[in-house]
Amino acid sequence: MADSTTTTSSKRTGDRDEQVDRIVLENARAAATAIAYQEIAQSMVLAVQSSVQHLQGLFTVNIATTGAVFSQALEGTEEPKELERRLDASQKTVQAGIEDLRTLTQAAAEALRSFPSSTPPPPGDAATASTGSSPRKASPSRKTNKSSTKSTTAQKKTKS
Image (cartoon, rainbow, N blue to C red; front, side, top):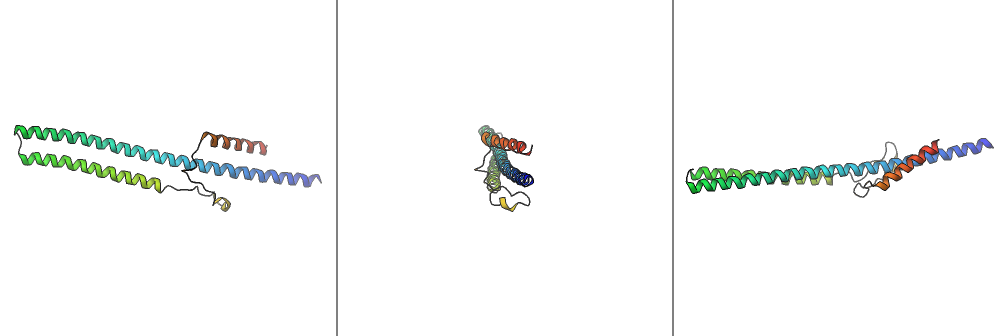
């Protein structure tokens, strides 16, 4: 009789351990996906910010070039065709910078749109294939981390 009770208790403990493991893994996957999404978003923001600063530099150079060209035009020291060529080159550089920024922002937006919207199921576990969560909804917080820690602690105690 004692063997039957011990076996049943052991089986329940094993089932509980498996359930705790599954919950911890699901929470860890959701948290990792959310962190990855945040890191990618931050990288995209930094890339766009850098491109905007580059464009600001191009605008500054364009303004300086325009001022120099007008100064030389008033002094009459350069040929009008040469001055026009400088202005055109400066404007083309600014337009290329604007196009580069447009391309970069579109690529950043596409990278964020195409980020996986659910966590992949664990290898060989079809039961959790439909329980993935969206990284935009499942952002890691202090509460999530604490509950994961509590689950891990409970798991360790159960195994002991």
